[in-house]
Amino acid sequence: MHQLQSVGGPPNGYRSPLRRLGYVMFLSRWIQAPLYLGLIVAQVVYVWRFMAELIHLVQLGFGGKPAETTVMLIVLGLVDVVMISNLLIMVIVGGYETFVSRLRIEGHPDQPQWLSHVNANVLKVKLAMAIIGISSIHLLQIFINAARPAVTDRELLWKTLIHLTFILSAVALAIIDRIMLGGRPGRFGQQAGGPANAPSRVSVA
Image (cartoon, helix red, strand yellow):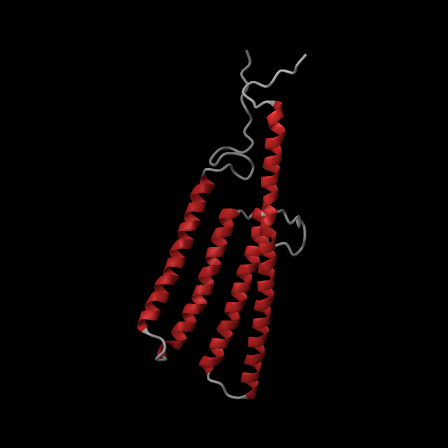
């Protein structure tokens, strides 16, 4: 006797190729792995640049009497490198965890606190906040150099507007994420606003 096919389902001969195709598509996420490895190389470059700037600052600070503005600009440059490095870490760790594969570091003492609840939307908001911090450092550097003839009022205006655009974009992403979170099930599986673990009512005839 021939097996009966499930009502509304595809024939058994078509299930296996479709399943293989879906599995190949699922494996395609590993194509992104070299991208994150490349960002690790970029991280090494930033560490090298930070150490070079730090050595320059030490030589300048102990070998002469530089202006306070010069020292401040170099320090802000170091802070800028650190913030960009933090941005790279969030993209590498969070992006790999979200789009490629689980890191499986639950219980590790050095596990980042934000990694336990990271998803694509949370990662976007965190990246937007990091970009705002980097933009703030660049804007502060421009304001310190505002007295120099090379810095024009037009440049100050445009960089301020760009910084405000970053802030508005981050606020919009946070609001969108909050709206989307309101329609999802709660942490314990209940719908938002509903009672937790509410017993189901069964009618008894």
